[in-house]
Image (cartoon, rainbow, N blue to C red; front, side):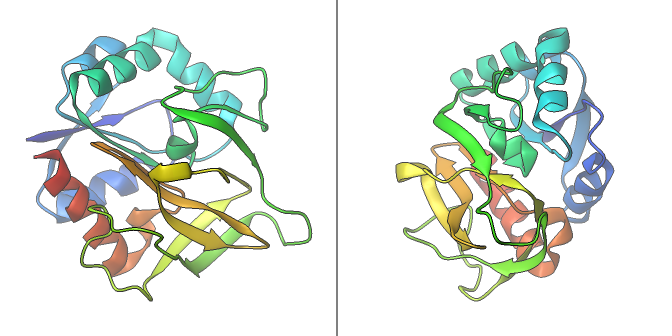
Length: 201
């Protein structure tokens, strides 16, 4: 099985590729919607501003191709901004639409903390998760963000506290997302990516 990475210019794409390659996964890059429509498993990496991502996904049919692949049953993992794209919109760019796979909006992290939330932090798990299976409860993950989802609902499988609780990971069938960067999170991040590969089979 080949993992298709959405190539819209995200700076962390090469590091995600390398992390997947270390696990023995074969990857390819997609820059057009039709390439995503036939994908078996998709990773949407993300760093930067929500508006830039939303504009990139609107171009060349990427958003349409992503949604078509998810509807067909392809496995999906959104990383950092890639997870935020699953929601209807973000207050970082309220005029831009997200993929709307999940209801609600991404909002700024709570006032009174240093932004961005940069560095290592732990997460709590309100329910079992295939994405986090076998990873120790006290594992640390690497974060780099100023916005997050706060109303994860039943899809939330991990929360993190940074001036208040926010959604650190979601899982809904074969659709998953993480606010942290597994490609920068050492053994715990590698284990999570391995779990995603298992979910995608």
